[in-house]
Image (cartoon, rainbow, N blue to C red):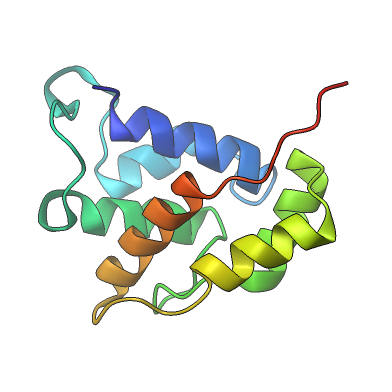
Length: 125
């Protein structure tokens, strides 16, 4: 299986752009590691990966300190980086924007899973 660290870095590169320019520093600060012994060999799990996902999404400007989606940032990222239409972004926001969880880690984890499962169509040049 793919490392969730790699997946987070790819998402943050697409989403955050200049918001958090040093992803290597974010990875280190969040304790995610760079593969190897820290690579995830099983599906993502809230207990094992929730804090790291929260930390990475927070540093990437996707969630606030409570784990809630920062809607304006997500909209801007989808418009700028993915060239999504307003209708596509509205659908993602409606599906994923509702707080789902009791802790900030759980909320961010569930948001990440939802966004991963609900990408807007990418435009081909």
